[in-house]
Length: 192
Image (cartoon, rainbow, N blue to C red; front, top):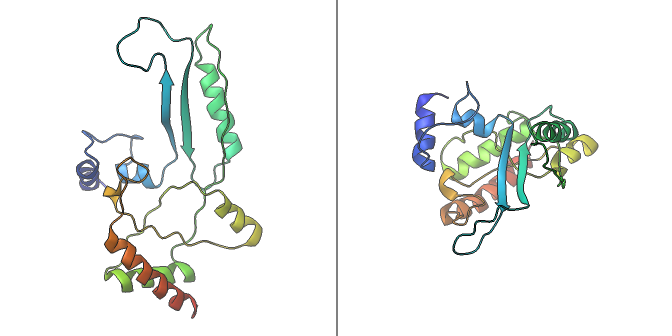
């Protein structure tokens, strides 16, 4: 994953230049590295026109994508400690915690992973591309730890589907092929 993959990401996203953790491609940063994102911010006057009043309060929302081996409680404590360390004198902070969960990872080369790859190739006519993709479904890792049950997570969205954006979309062709793939997967799983 080098320069050409970065160029592909820039073309798809419209970003002006690569960014992220030094020493890693954009694909690696998006698919395999832990992240911290500011996904909400607000404060001050939000209406039309201008105001010269400095806001008394401001807020922001953070989320973190963890990778296997990271402890959500430890990461949360580290983020809080970092924010408190950099808090200007005279400024107070309140933290409201959301949900958390351990990162989930399964082996795409297990018998179930191979069955999924066969089903994908039968339905789409091409070998699937294996990537790590983030998602916030904490119960999946719990099911693995408590029940010993792995989950198959088969994403059919394309990079330009704008997941969670106002213009989110999903190609009908992928929906229809997804139905076909689900049927093929059930047939493959029946023989493993």
